[in-house]
Structure formats: structure tokens, C-alpha cells
Image (cartoon, rainbow, N blue to C red; front, side, top):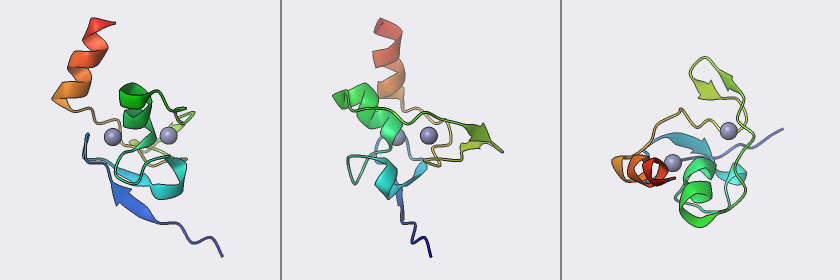
Length: 69
Ligand SMILES: [Zn+2]
Ligand SMILES: [Zn+2]
């Protein structure tokens, strides 16, 4: 049996699969943008990624960071 644990990202507020991220409190998308960790190769279905469960949310802070690039 697959024992999948979920957590809520402190940055974007999305649910994510704990083992998909290098950090306990952040989804792979946010760890990638904030700390440069490898991102999940997202595959979206029904409004969330089937791999990491990130739902596409971005915090205002993340949006600002992305705007600078
Ligand atoms: Zn996040
Ligand atoms: Zn993903």
C-alpha cells in the first residue's frame, strides 16, 4: 500500500504530497522558486498536479519574484 502523506504549503496555501518536496512546509513549486530545488514535472488534471497535488496557487510574494525575471 502506498502511504501518501499530504501537507499544506506555507507559501502558496496549496495541498501537496510531502514526499514530492524537499521541504516539509513548502510545495515543490515554491521550493523551486524560493530555493532553487528541482521542481515537480507537473501534470495537471482536474485542477491539480497528479504528481505533487499542487493546485497552481501562487502567493503574492512568489508572483512578485516571477515578475522580476
Ligand atoms: Zn507552494
Ligand atoms: Zn507537480
